[in-house]
Each structure stands twice: as C-alpha cells, then as structure tokens.
Length: 285
Ligand SMILES: [Fe+2]
Image (cartoon, rainbow, N blue to C red):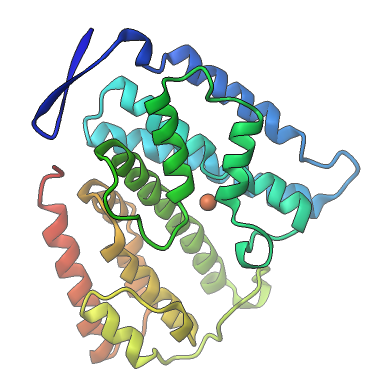
C-alpha cells in the first residue's frame, strides 16, 4: 500500500491504482492510430489541414502540460494523468470536423461530449482505476466549459485546472501567430478577419480589463478589442506557473505593443500587468 496526503487527511491507494507508464504509452499509440481514420486519402486538403491543426494543438498542449506538471511538482502518476487529459481533451474534434466541417460547437455538437462518447466506445480507459478514469473524463468534459462547477473533489479540480490553463496557453500561441502574420502583411493574410482593424477600443472592454472582470464576448467590436480580451484572459488563469510561462513567452508584452498608445489603454494594460506581476511572484499552493 502507498500512502498519500490529501487536504490534511491520509488516504491509501493499492499499487494497481496507479496508471503505469506502459498504459500511458499505449494511449499515445492508440491516439496516433485513431486520428488517422479521419484524414482523407483522396485529396480533401481542407479536411486534412484542419485535422492537422488539431493534431499539432494536442501535441503542444501535451508538452505544456508536462512543463506545468513539473512546475507544480506533481508526482509521476499525476503527471501521466494530466498528460492523458491533454492527449484526449480534443479527441472529439476529429469526428466533429469530419461530420460537420466546422469546429463551432454552437452549430454542431459540444466536442467534449463527442470526446467522452469516443473514450467510452473505444474503451480506452477501462484498464485504469475507477478514480483515475473519473478524473480524466471529468477534466475532458470541463476543459471547454465557461467555468468549473463548484464543489469538485481535489483531484478532479487539479486536472481540470491544468487542462484549462494549458489549452489556453496554446490558444495564446495560435492567436499570437495569427496576429504576427496579419501585422507583417495584412494584404496577404489568409484567415478570416472577424473584427475590423480599426484604431479604437470599446470602453466596456477597456473597463473590464482595467478592473479584472471577465470580458463579455458579445461586446467585441474591433481587432483591438480581441487583443484586449487576450490580455484579460490573464485573470482567468489558475496557476502562477502558467502566468510565468505566458510572461516568459512574451505574449502579454507583444499584445500591449500592438495596442494603440492612449491613456485609456495604458490604464487597462498597467492594471493587468500589476495583477500578473503580483501573481507570478506568489508560490503555487
Ligand atoms: Fe477543446
């Protein structure tokens, strides 16, 4: 028996309740084979390019999850569980895109629900301990919800927070790449531009960023609003270690450099950076 500490109480797991490295390696192999079923062999490049984006996203989120697990000093077992969540969090995206040709959950299906269906149909977590299966499935389910439900057990909350943070890290990565390409050459930019590149920022959004409130997406009007929204995500990050990584990658500084140099923008960006500086200097508990 192995003893572990949870919120001040001692509890015990038998050896077979630990996910083994071999079980994790088998899941990685399963994932690689599974997604191949969705790629087109007869030249549907639109489908293949979109699926490839999600395959790359998954691998980057796995990498960020390993880094975050290390920063949080998780043990080997919890690291494997966190990485399993990362590997499976978007497993529903492949079926979603092939079936509906979109990643919009609102016009197709919630991709985490599709993912949970696949996990059960394929019986890929059956060999794991029931607690571990529960933590993984719950975290996959909660990764794309507006907020985490209240009253979660410690491990479900931990793995759910990790995937929400590392998923967001990769959303930053993709958004930064898109903005960089746009700013380098707006005329050749390939992707759809959802909001006009106008010099103004919406006052309600500036106010939300300045006062640490979450931005209501319905208020977005301009490309600058989207950049402010990305700064505002900093308030929605769970771990100081994730914020340290965002700072280390230079995302916030770069977004601020792309915003107009006005006193309203300065007030909002200084507020968010004050919050970030404060958080990154506190230890993760
Ligand atoms: Fe997702």
